[in-house]
Length: 268
Image: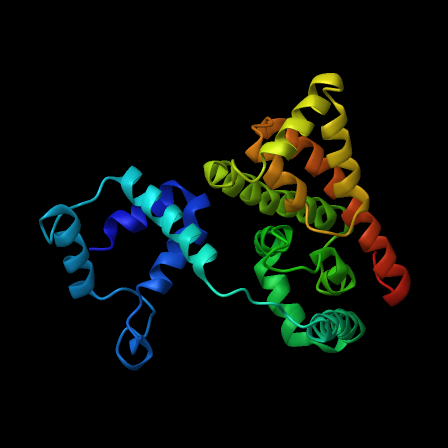
């Protein structure tokens, strides 16, 4: 029953947010009380939706129709949902908690045998995956390079560590680009003015937007997705965008690693 959706998720990973949003919207109210204790649509509900949509409860929707439906429904839920504002005090406390966590981990790295052993066991593949999550800053706003002393204490080598972090964070930025590229049509009406100005700038100075992206990724401690996703909307070359982001990530993460090493020690 869920096979077409799983196949779509494997083939088009940029649709994961929309697919997860649809799964959550269609979840049974008491999903946490019954096996398998996952917020997934019930079989009866899925059969009813397929029968009302296609006339057959066992129909298999085309992948393109599923993709259009989940992206459209996610956008409609976003537009129709109540506006939620996080109080400023909560934001400040959240940032303070994250900073305190980074400080605590780096200061206690030498005493955290369990954590350092787990990090060592995960090795560079685990570090790469963690860096991908960190690179998609909309999920985890703290750069993983802030934990550089902890990784060195866990037995990682400086240069491979920095290279793995830079590549992984660029992978997270790639996810942002793919999401922007896949949902471009949803934002056409909002970005018309911005796109016109950006295209005019691009026509006058072809390399300037990519240079600005490089400088932003290298020196601005905010999510790269702020620029990467709009550039995907405007059909900038994937290779060019990722090259600029990778170069910027190398500089940014090296600077962060050196900074935290000076403060907390370590760094090989």
